[in-house]
Image (cartoon, rainbow over all chains, first blue to last red; front, side, top):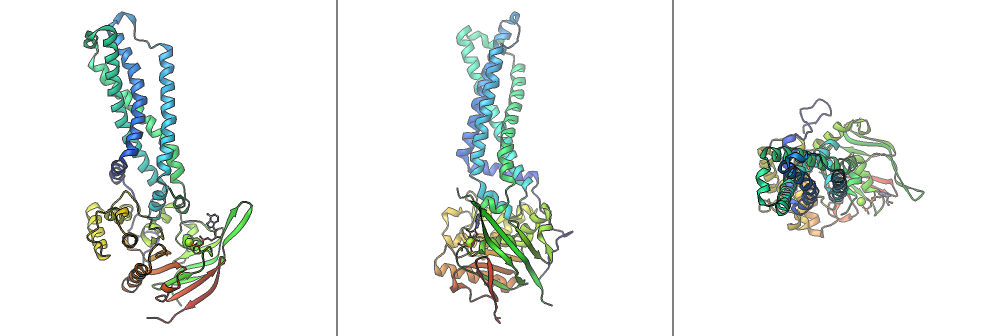
Length: 204
Length: 232
Ligand SMILES: Nc1ncnc2c1ncn2[C@@H]1O[C@H](COP(=O)(O)OP(=O)(O)OP(=O)(O)O)[C@@H](O)[C@H]1O
Ligand SMILES: [Mg+2]
């Protein structure tokens, strides 16, 4: 039988982005309940942020004389809401990833390296961040529009520039992705560096 | 000179538990001949799983070395270690360790992803492997939808996916009834004879060691006896 040589052989170990991406999508699809919880908690935080943000934009453009600065309490509300959202996400990720320790151990037995495990989780979190960001932004914008038109009459909506909406969509989604990815780094790293035996010992 | 595929030298693994030191493996020296079927036999707690983990490069020894093809695996870097697990060794576990959200076919294809095999080839090969294991009708079933014996056959197909030259099996029949267990052992023996894969199987079941070329008796972390049989 043929001998496999340790060094300089033709056989590789790899996990290219394309493969990691499709595996992430599969994982998200197959753990739909978990995924919905994570996306939901991102969307919730982001929609609160968006609500405050867009209410300001709408009011500012409506009453153009009044300037566009955000009030201090709103700023702190946003910071606190993002912080709470981030803590919640880290917690959700710790649990979700912990449930997959055995699977991580198995993948490592099949040739996965630490960085491959990281890659898988980070791509998943990127997708969660994108989806949660867009959903949260849409929801927050709708509630901002609804509450301002209740306060000031329906014609207030005509004053909201599309350009501003798109700009805030980009900024908010970016923030959402950042939030999601950053809150995945620690749980994923904790899992990825386990050796296969330690990871397989977990019986969830 | 005999061609040893695996050798251990003073292999020792201690666990610290509540201030005590458990000597799970204590100065173990064994040699595994290339292409043979080996059984590691011993009572519960004797150190079989620990030995399995060390030989497979899944955990690090406290002291001593494991050599695979005369290379000390403690000296491998992360990439080489992953390469060893990916291409050289196929692992089979008592609890199967299939990934529950993946189908049988996806489970078998998984190690081929890490080996860089393109999707269409992966799919073709995983289907072939499962058909060989008699699971052609079960390709798209998830592990939960399969019987224990079927799950273990999926695990064997997965272990063979990247054409390893060592199969490490830790109590592969531990969760199976006698007949299903014998079936699994016969599959492993056939693989050993047809493909020349070196098999190292741990068990505490005396009924399934008849097929072995070599038997290592383990007790309290030591090799009590190494027995060679003049089979085949
Ligand atoms: N992670 C661990 N922490 C502490 N002690 C451990 C650990 N793993 C194994 N041991 C101890 O090491 C010894 C050998 O265990 P091992 O699992 O290798 O036995 P085994 O022969 O595989 O047993 P079984 O047939 O029950 O699977 C036992 O005394 C066990 O309690
Ligand atoms: Mg054991």
